[in-house]
Length: 204
Length: 134
Image 1: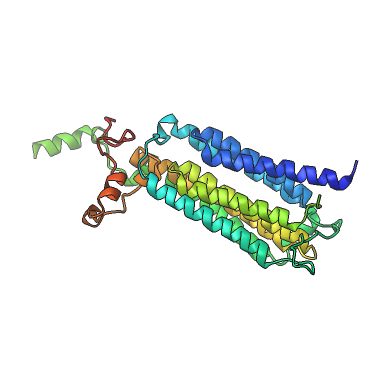
Image 2 (image 1 turned 135 degrees about the vertical axis):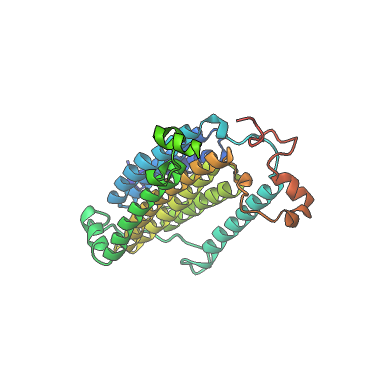
């Protein structure tokens, strides 16, 4: 079978899955179904990364996004429970429809402009696709990405590690609420006072 | 049939970004808004990797994607903890009911319809949570 045809089928299959997952993410009434749509989008994105010769990023996408982020979303949805889902009323429907229409218009015009104003053309002025070059065998392997990350990107890499630590500590502190206060700052409980002190205070 | 080119990936990334932006604008569930942000970040990742495939002498695009994944994980953790804290304080994760910082009532009272639409406990509102006995 023709390899180009296989590549084309592969791309359109994963592109359709990614778009369907994205639409079901934002359209699902139940947030659990939305998280499943997000999972479908992320898996399809990993497949597209593979077709772009980014094998390391495909693995990272599956491990971090599908394995951690989506599970975190599912945990949050389950912790909040079904009462947290907003009711299906028509409040604020006007501003939201307006904002959605603005975003749709802006995005359609952006896609059209990027199609019309960039890229190569034939002599008759027809827009032609920009063919991808032949893949270098070293593209996207762990070694070549690591050379980049630990070469020019070593400072952002260290800052990213600090960011992850700070965000995890901050997430625990924010989600824990008032129970997280240290013991010496809590108000002393009255029954824990010694008997002598209480009687002395009452006599005075 | 044209072989798959750079523009296919870029247009797919743009469409995914638009879907995410529309979800962020139109949905009131704060968790769905966070998932829309993840969609937008994923679309940008796809664009970066596609450009990296185009100019494959360096791996700067994949490096950026790597950092975006890290930042997205941190953002999801912090955002979801904020959602949980908001639900604890507000008994609601609706984005239009998170209006504790909107203190000047007299400014919003002049916008009658807007005020009615965002008031937390109008009698017609079925999603009135703060007046429910806890």
